[in-house]
Length: 350
Image (cartoon, rainbow, N blue to C red):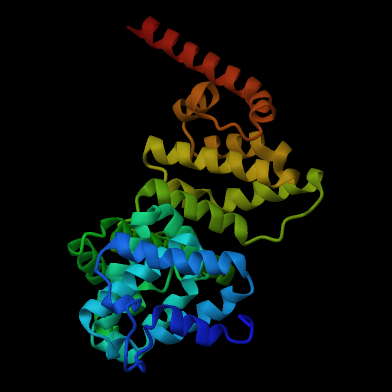
């Protein structure tokens, strides 16, 4: 009768619902507050759910409901439940969607959610690693909602980072900071594309990007990648290979001053060149356009001779390597000859 009585079954196995007035010797809350004991309790649920797979959904719903009643438990009881929940998450018995219960306004306001999350994530990371935890959070869209563990007036990356770092969860703090950074970059890219679509002047766009770099501490190497993606996303590209090259050259000629503004360092130039290689490889109708794009940006002083030669000899990526190196062969030879002639003229001048 497990399918019919799943809810009652899960209530009875651990006896943890706040409405329980008398507890058996098997009650989770009467057990020792340590991970080894919680792992033993988790194993009971693990075996049961693995044997009766159809119980999984009902179990998850029960956990969600249970977390809404955290205020009815003592601190010690909440700690035990948090540790158990973390282990169940690590085992895959429940999904990270159960965390939505912790965003309950009353639990958040009184600090119950954040304190519970500390114990939960500690036991989860103890069983797995932060990469596994991050993957589980992303799978159900919880990766960008962790700030909601705090009230609106404390919902900042700085507060989150300090709270969880002080609690011994620096890896979770770093993850949240990285997620916020990714979110900020996506918003920046979206705004850039909108400005280009509106026909804003390059001067205004450059000023906006520089201001965002100051505010968000984004490096030039990272920014040039965002700018390149934005520039290439504002056009409906022709699907015909013979026409797209001409279209790309015309478009990039217009935006070369924007690219130049954020390639003042060799690393930024190389980042851009690798982005171009990746883009031309991922968009097959651009495969033959690579060399012409590089030459255009060389003539526009966006890419330097040194960086192009470095890319050619050692810094290129594997994607489309043979095709792109072959395309660049004659131009690279021309660059090397021009460099030798320049050195020869300097020697004669001396």
